[in-house]
Length: 321
Image 1: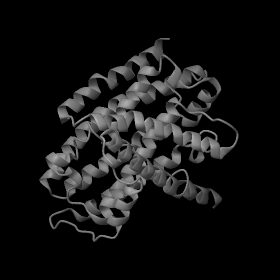
Image 2 (image 1 turned 60 degrees about the vertical axis):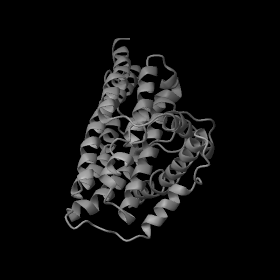
Image 3 (image 1 turned 45 degrees about the vertical axis):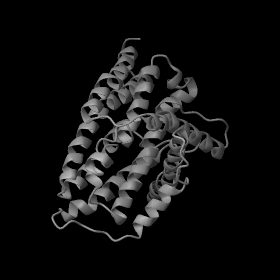
Image 4 (image 1 turned 180 degrees about the vertical axis):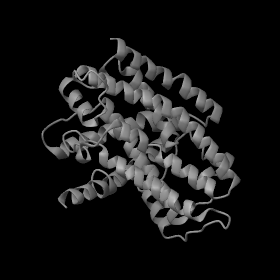
């Protein structure tokens, strides 16, 4: 019984659930402020994402007459739940080792596409032509960034397995973190720098921010898959998006720059959050403030030409060195 209660605590409170959501909404609010300042605008308050969700939760739920009702209703719930589970698996060095040490890279690789799949299902079930266009765009961009992500994860697992004498890839997040705590961070290893750069390029695509927001593209397809959503259902999509932001940024820290500064867990938690903020500023805020939107073909070519090649370089170096 205690194991079940602890599992619920990790999924619903920390590091998933309330903690992940609160920090993710703060990240989104801070990102909007940073982008506004860099574009010489005032910008909204940092709690604006929270206010948006609170307002949506008070609205009426409307379902199109021609929509597939069950898929339309459950899609945002599935997307949010998948990311809450991912957050619970995420180890925080010096604070939390991951729920039951189940933080396997392969598990995360299969869970990370859930919000995109939920958006595609919800958009296609709405019977809106804009949702159908958004579905096809989301599917293409997801296939594009999943290829370099798989090679990045395989590279990290291979170098950990070889260094620890396992002889094969080690996909345990806990082992990956522990090895770096003992032998140095992968982000400072010359062999792993191409993979690290590729991961930074993966982040805006999977979060869906400019220049890779082609699936929603307000000025082209009016939010695409989310066009028919409103009220609590749209709030669930926004919560899932916020949780995914926390998960992918935290995963980048875990894979390349884990570390502790002392034996006091609260200071280690703050240090982890600072590194997540730095990742967000470099990979998301700077890019959003300086770029427009790619066409879907440009986004696909970019991911197959640059991040995929960089990840492949690191993978080959790990295998031959």
